[in-house]
Image 1 (cartoon, rainbow, N blue to C red):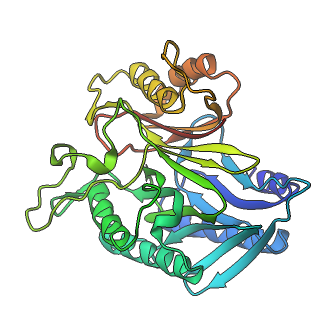
Image 2 (cartoon, helix red, strand yellow; image 1 turned 120 degrees about the horizontal axis):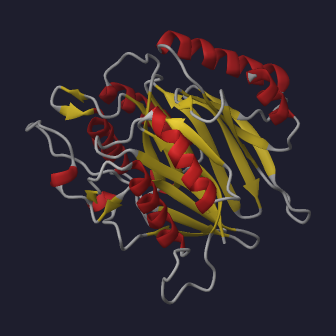
Image 3 (tube, rainbow, N blue to C red; image 1 turned 120 degrees about the vertical axis):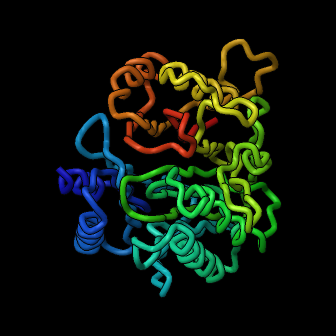
Length: 355
């Protein structure tokens, strides 16, 4: 099954990233599966080879999920994709007239059994060095995915997600944020430690951070919703925007951050997964200008192109899928078993929309 999915990706043009979602029994199996994927890509793709990310989240609608990111080229556009090997990891450089994009993935600690703080430090250090190679900084990242093993566990008084946020804030502090923080997802995995994927851009492109007036900006959360019992350090907020709009001459795209049933900064406490799913989708629709009854709709509103649905409870997939099949009948959706960053939240959704 895995090789069939990978062979289908080989037949596509300009593949830049492969994200494989699968069940792992422990970190040893995770390492074995990741090594297999990297070796398979080395053998079957010619340079520039796509980046490989393995995410230890059990697919809930099928045995395996492979998400393929590829680059669409237009006839009148000269685009060059270059593969770069560094001591900190492999990444892709995408160049066009007046435009540069860096695509990095699978950035993780050398050892997956280290504390979350140390793993996060190593992953962000690798990201920082790659950005420096291209005379970029964290402020150039437009989309970031943060995969965290045991995201809601409490260790030495801190939630693992809070430990990650504290490290992220330290690394982000040295950058200017002219276009807001990245669109981002912070989601739990069964294994795999801390892993970071990101896209960074600069040049001839308009970048607009998207806010949602139904939700308080995550980077402005109060201490009331940050989970830590430690007194030796200040709690840092999650540094991301609700979405990011990228516009050039040929494309208007929205990266939709991981979104949950939160209004203001408080979770919807009703543990009804359908209610949480529909509130989450309403939040996304409001963000991109699609919700019914909204006055003064923007001239262009977003069309959902792709969604990932993360579910805390495996058994919820049937009712959630049935609901979303009705609400989003033409949208490809991956359903994944994953822990969400707050105990009371049962579902998180991220995606991409085009204008």
